[in-house]
Structures are given as C-alpha cells and as structure tokens.
Length: 219
Image 1 (spheres, one colour):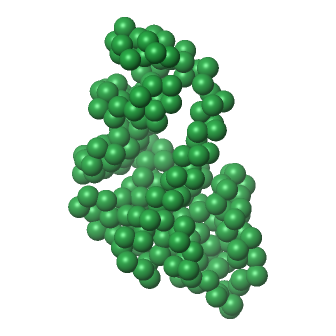
Image 2: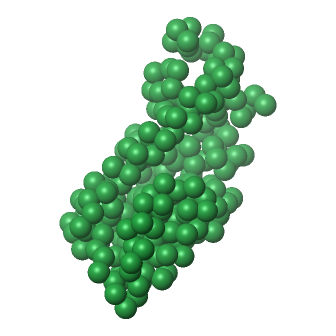
C-alpha cells in the first residue's frame, strides 16, 4: 500500500533510524493521510509537538483519538501533564485522557494512570492499572508492582515526588516535564530495540523513495 509506505517512511524520518531525522519532511509525507489513518493522524500530531506547534497538533490528536488510537489519547494527556507550549498543567484532565487511552488498549498510559492514583493514595485503584499494564508488557508497571507490593489503601506511604522518574502534582509544574523526559528516554531505548528487529521492512519502505529523497542513497 503506497500511502501506508509513505506514513511508515515519515515515522522513520521522525525517529532517525536508517535516515537522518527530518520532522518537516515527515510532516509532508504523513499529513495527507492524517484523516484516512488514525495512526497517521497521531504521527502528524506528534511531529507538530516536536516542532513546537502544539495547538495545531491537538486537532490531529483529537481526530485520531476519536478513531480509537490509544497513542493519540496518551499524547493529549502528555500535553496536559507537561504543560507544553501554552497548555496549562492539569493532572486531573490528563487522567481522563490516560484512562481513555487505557480503554483503547494503550500500554504507557497504564503506568501514568497508576501513578496518578498512587499520588492520591488510592492504592487499590492504582494496582488495577499496574496489573493491566503488566498484562500488556509495560516495563514501568512491572517496576511499580514491586514498589507497591506492601502498600494498601489503609497504609499508603507512597509519594510520587520521592521518585524522580515519575510525575508529581505535589512538586513544581516542571517536575512533570522531567518525569516524562526520563520516561520517554527509556521508551526510546525500548523502541530502538524494536526498530532493529524491523530494520528490513523499514529499508524496503525507504527504497521506493530514494529518487524523492536523495539522502536515502546512503542507506
């Protein structure tokens, strides 16, 4: 499928695997298919966030989320957690998007929904999301399950602010950015491993566009 191949190449341009990162070219490739494919809409939204065009990103993320894309819902939560651009940090609103992402099959959102409830000392509610995240293979949830194994709602001696890899509504608004940055770095590491496994497919997709993008000749 020609259109899906273009979106795949746009994804590769965003991640810099096999080819140099180029968000503008990635946007050019993916944007025409944003309405047709939810994953393309989410990708366009993510690209616009990286280009510091958060307000434009929301339109694409909302559309992709309405089509059932869990990553788009997670990315809207990300904007509310970090306060990117002109967005105001709002963990309570972010929770709604995290829970929607979980319902749509999201993985990363399980961890952050759990963290919200841990920060509010609702251990049993947090454990629900942690267990769900573990079922879906979320590494962060496996770690959290170890950390809270001894906690209950009546013995909730846990504060996210004491662990600098997680967000906290008790700390400064910048804290959420720090937590998300470290979390994202870990996810990038996991994603890099996954990309190694799919390198052959990425090269096949890129091969058809070498005339359009000369820099691909170096692959």
